[in-house]
Length: 282
Image (cartoon, rainbow, N blue to C red; front, side, top):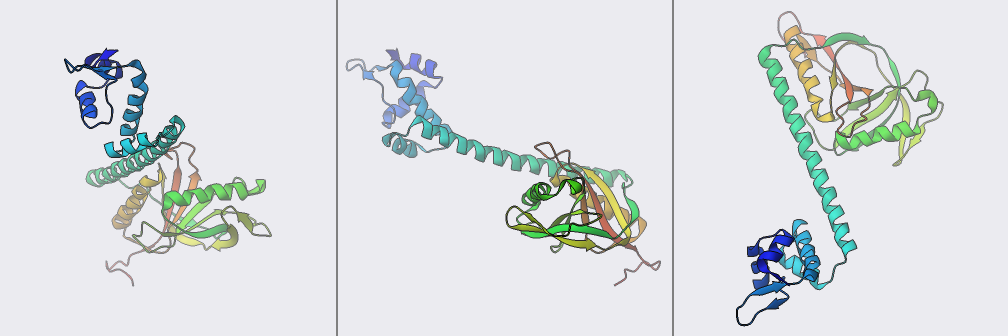
């Protein structure tokens, strides 16, 4: 048998916690000396205490823990609860990490503005481009990235090296429920449409030629893409161009890292020169 202090040390908890659990009836000592009031715990009580502590760390309240103990939840069920909590935690951690990367990218854009760093933007012509694409409303760009995997799986070997693109057809400023077109540029489209997973179909189409495209390349996960648009916006102000038409995002390299940091994207925005009078054409 172990005293409160000994058992607390072995279990790596405080004596105060053991006393509190005793008071509320959640975890009582194996024996209590009637004359002295001293509490004693047995080695066999370590497993029940660990069960309580595990449930506590899983986020259950004390009343929920008591109900769980009353229903004699198995170790396998506890493991299932742990895996669920682990998945939720990893998801939340991923969200916070993406948020931090987006903030850092926006701070870098601010630094570029403050230092008057010339935007790395190239003006070029883009030819007419045949495509295979699918249009879909998705919750966000992150969700939409899964469609690229569907496209990759459906493409024949002759089209395996085609370049992926994405066009956002939603109104400017929309960040959820995005109307996106995903596809690949092809020299010679196949005779028939290609069926993807999730009841999606790649349809033959084309993107028209553009005489002037402001373009820049961004290396980084999706949450850093806005730095490219910021660079093109600064470039348009400096060089007196007006942005117009649908923006295109070309995937020069699909991400292989789990955080997407090796994604390489070329942003293309149609532009036209502003009139020399300084006014903006309607």
